Amino acid sequence: MNNDKRPPTKGPRRSRPVTPSRLVAFEVLMAVDVDDAYANLALPAKIKEFGLSSNDAGLATELTYGTLRMQGFYDRVIANAAARDIDTIDLVVLNILRMGVHQLLNMRVAQHAAVDESVNLAEHMASLGAVGFVNAVLRRTSRHDLEDWQEFITKDISNTDERLAALYSHPVWIVRALKQSLEAEDRGEELENLLASDNVNPRVTLVELPGFVDANDEVEGEPTKYSPLGMSLNTGGDPTRFARVREGVVRVQDEGSQLAALVLSRHHEITPGEKWLDMCAGPGGKAALLAAEATLGGAVLTANEVIPGRSDLVRKALAILPDVNVVIGDGVDIGLVQPNTFDRILLDAPCTGLGALRRRPEARWRKSPKDVGDLTALQAQLLTSALQALKPGGVLAYVTCSPHLAETRAIVEGALRKNQKVSELDARSVLSKVAMESMDIAGDSLSVQLWPHRHGTDAMFISLLTKSE
Image (cartoon, rainbow, N blue to C red; front, side):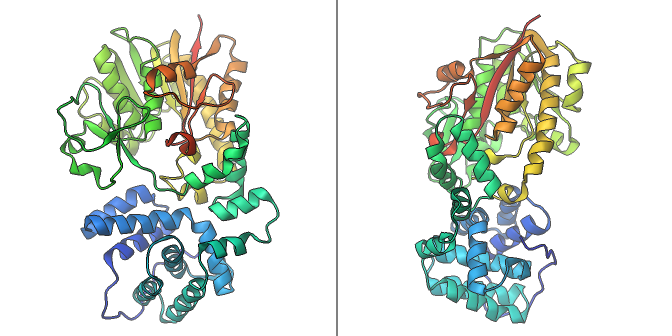
């Protein structure tokens, strides 16, 4: 990654303006690199700011997400076509080239249009000297198709992990972590399918909050395969076009996240008066589903969030739900302050997010092995606190959006070793009762690991724990 974070230097403007969809994608890519923005937040804001049509919004989305997902591979192509190291290319020019390469190799854009539009963007956003460079690099790139470039880029890479990392545009350390997780299930042969699935646009899935939606509500979509509350928008588009989404009774939520919340809320019948806790509630998606389930059963949910700004998001997410207490506090302290208090606890622990690389492609380039060490220390502390806050006989769901073994089984097994009163429940059995169809859950543990290539969900990990007196 080029470390030059200078703002764009505008060259002389041409009479022909940049197409709005390309300008939006370029500005989002720059925001991701310069401001550490999240594409899933920056892109919708830019689409709204520019007032893009549905078709233009679709093009901007593909340009943004496709370029981010395949950035590692494209950088190798660019370095070869430019005969220069990537770190020597100005960031503005590099992002223009990445977008151009994506159009040439992975989109149905005519070669002349992909090159011409990129050159036009360079004339508007880069220095005058960069225009010829962009033109030359993209014309060299266009002489070969995707398969040719894949073969050329990987021909001298003998290590299998490194080859897959280059081919599927993942850092090597992530490839190895995913491989270890699959091998723990005796499914190591699925690695290439998993990596490929990280580079595919995920479907938009919705959740209908129970108690708020009935059969007469009209939201176009098909029932999800597994979640009893989910719908899939296979046609894509902006889900806020539906009134019930705008009202907040139908939410955008991955099917895996829905199942993680339901495995806890439907583990056993709710007794009125139960106290529930969402320990790390921000931004509030799972908290909303839990609150709806709790309300129907006569339970009360407390939603805790340590970051004040994210607690505001939680309040907004829970605004239509009655009697939900949103508090700001460090989850690490809850167990000491409120021991043996809650009947059900969701610990959706902060994690690397390696299970959602389809939706947050920039995460693969931002995370490092050091992040795993920092996060696992926090995860262990949070789980210790959650177990202290759990009533004897209560149920705790430890959930991460990461399949990394250090963040999943290692954390659970560490808690089991430290506390003889803690035991693991059969999350797979509960999932089999919640899910609409049978799910292929591999391995021999009691926990659940979902996968994008196998289940079409984010790679959510779910473990259920309880403790005795």
